[in-house]
Image (cartoon, rainbow, N blue to C red; front, side, top):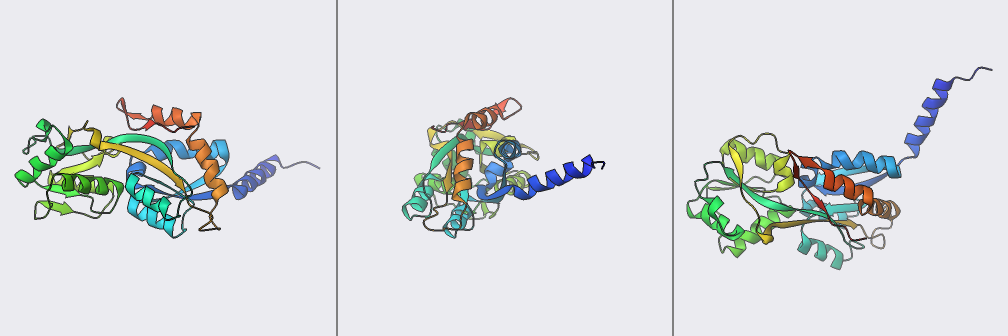
Length: 265
């Protein structure tokens, strides 16, 4: 009897695909817009067999999905909100994975003279002083939380026609800012991977207050027994390993690094 090798190979591939296990992970729009997921997910699948399904939302919504047990793990960047999530028992623990920084973006001619700022707070004060157009994400994301914290430190309530909260992810917010030739606040990775820059430029960075840490948190199986904690721990092991470090540190655009791996073994 002649074997149909093509049929056997197809059946084998089908069996492998059907046996693959899926982990649901809520991630920030800034992480997704950076393009890094397109590098990491195929490597995760090749090394572990895991299919990682990304739910792309702001940090606030990612935490709410974790609180409801609707995902197995989250990857976010808002330390205070993460610690509250853990304190309430929604997450099992927190592992730092990588970091980059926040930056101020605005018109290349910089009417508010943000490039001369000595701090992130001073940059916002310069923008508010002339009521230059400023586009905020306004979506309870980690980026939005950081921006609002800086406004509070500047002792400024950003209200008025000059301040536009769009309630959108980072890519959409950058698009609005580009269309309006306005100032905005972004993570560096999203800005570097953004294609519709128009007349915008990176105007200010470097304040230690703009440090932007990303952390991985498995959802607590004691709170939600149905979550795939075993898969979440398998993914954590990969994300904190040598292959992840190589891919994260090696991901650049025009020679600029988008993230720096800093997971502690």
